[in-house]
Length: 406
Length: 230
Image (cartoon, rainbow over all chains, first blue to last red; front, top):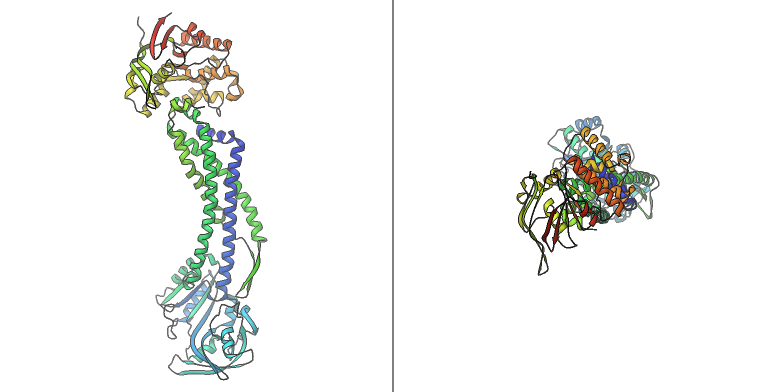
């Protein structure tokens, strides 16, 4: 070992109790940071999964401009080719085509505006959790039929229950008047469904024939193998589709408000981590400053002997680095165990949340590379940044004054 | 024949400002030290001994006057140049030993050679030889805290001498030692001075050092009082 790291290492061991306390502070900060990150990733992961799998998917394919100005006529062209491309993509775990159209819904003497959504029940079952949002009755039958599922709001407006008749009038894509009678098979939950408005869900083929739309779709909801890569996977999907007439947008774009709210919440988490690191920084600064003050005479001797200031600066920074690396390693070990525990057992939520057919009862940690790399990098940078001031102070001591100090 | 001068101090003064009061630590001092001399600067506390030694070593700068060491004008040097100059030309022995606590005896002595960029093989042989000369060959792996005061000062002497500097400056080197240990160390330094021809300059108010030195310069109130060659 060369002189500088050897001296630095021995200086770290010189006041073992103080080094241990500082190390514990840094390791504690690392562990807290890591656990917070893991729990936050896990919680956001659960929320994102709950939200996206209830309806939107991780990304959606539309005809270009559909999201800004939805229209019955703005449908995805050459659907068979799009479906073939999606089937060939390994990153796409499941996909489900949909059609949308506005309509008037009648039952008895009541009439309300409704939104028709044509779905492929078998594909939706693989991709989404629509069926789990039923409050009563049965889901849309797998084969095209007159069976429909209505949202709680539409059911309340028309006083519908499973088994009741429902008439819809709309505009067909060919300019004709679309009208037909349907039978309510099920009603969606009022509190745990992502369908807030007056929705009427029916088989996609039934919707296509009702709207004289032909073999088209307005939307394809995609579920990727990893929700965390939604942006990248959406871009890969767009590249694979290679059609400028199509937009492929991740959930962060299609559900912009939800995403913005989540980002804001994350900022809150970042502030918590910042506070943790500020506490660590103050602790490290205090320790290093104490050590520098105590050893002022030593630095005076080193400089009197002809040591360059850069060596003294490097010595103190090396001491901080050694302590930070050892603390980060200890913190990583503790975090590994803690995050493993939190990812399996988690922290129970006093008031469980239920949404989109999923009950959220525990905060579970999601362990990823970042759960360790971010705290490690933060602890190292914080310690080194904090070490600069005492190191400069020591490097700039005047030998004659330093030799007079006790 | 007159000895080649190692130190030439001309008109060196040092004035400190303590609030609005000016304290004259050194009035114009002229002093020349020749190569191979064994000189003590004596005087009571506050007479200016340490200040003069600090200025000669380049640790402090004079308020006026010039110091030439080994033929170079130190007043013209920057802090970095002074640092390199001390490394290459001056050996220090301090009253409080001032060894580096985290370095072993061997590493403490080796340190100055490392600073000078001496190769590993030569470093090892010079350190071993020097430690044998000061009688600490068997304690090279010990840390300063494991040595007595006298042994620590021997290490400091070895550290000061190992790089064979032009001059060794010793500030009250026996002040923290009992008289027997101090006397033995002085004998050892005198013997090294005679055998190796190294120049020693002490600051002291210890009668024993004054007796053992070959030349005695006395300072009083920042002025040279007497300069006796024994």
